Length: 179
Image (tube, rainbow, N blue to C red; front, side):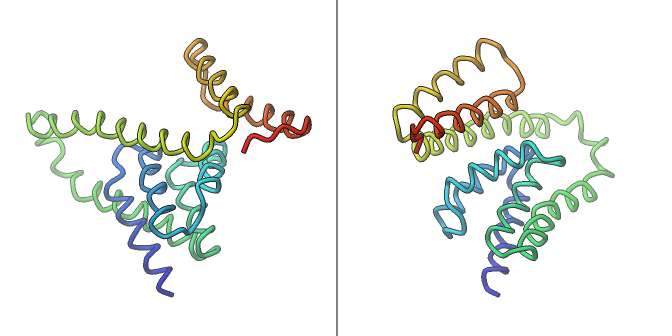
């Protein structure tokens, strides 16, 4: 029962502080790996990949998967509701006063500063994922190739996830281990 309470508290906090959409939840989910050990970084990587290809908001999908991994179906429901509840409260609370303050210097400054902060958090998670998941030479080569292709062709990231999945299957069939 205490795990369920911790799940509610942690995902409520994630909902409060993950400003900017679903990808902003990743640093917090990554931290939960090390704080509680509810799931591994490999499972988190899989949750992110699945969340990106399933319908719905990425953050809510990741909360559902993380909650399910931690506490089953009830955990998935509770984590998702705890994640979206702060946003709901925030929207209801500010919807009436937003028009009044939309041109306020301080409001603009805060919103403008959230973008680089979110980018920094995502970069930190990316470095952590790299350290935890790129553990062999074939994985490093695959990473470098996909990274270069993403800069050269600027396609939707789903193309690169799909290509990485196919490459992983082919390499596994050839007996080459990526992890």
